[in-house]
Image 1: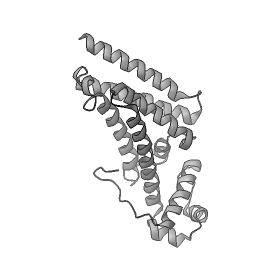
Image 2 (image 1 turned 180 degrees about the horizontal axis):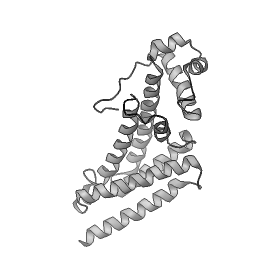
Image 3 (image 1 turned 45 degrees about the vertical axis):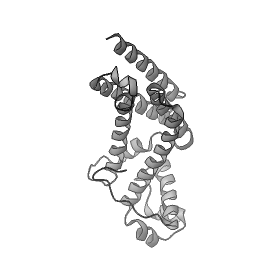
Length: 210
């Protein structure tokens, strides 16, 4: 994360990477509050002293877990956006494709950021900025794909309309993440993607008619 107020990051030595890997698995599967440093150290095969030497606190491990998860997600997303080509609608839909692929491999319990926020809602917690920063980045991404980054589409959709559509796309995306984790119905990303496609088609047609 590269935003003002971002919690500090630590240098990941081999031992620190083992600790982070164990913590990431445990935090996602069991919950942040349910997992203590004793269990993390045991799973990583290190002493508690080594854990604290590398990270300083459990809070910092949580920061690293969420920031690392976000970085890996952005890498997956970047590959999908590159493969989608320059057409704005295709790039928007690629976000849903990327989330579907990510969730199939890394998201059986839903969005790690949403899950973490359910346990960390205090803005003073150092990990809170990582969570909210990631979601704000996603909103900016959707809006940008329809606005500044949208080429010809930017000339047909006013900035305020791009902002409105970006918020709707964000709601579709986040709803799909939650529905996937809850197993409410099968493959919510396909449904969300189709709704996004319909929304974009209608917005393009309405803008062209003005």
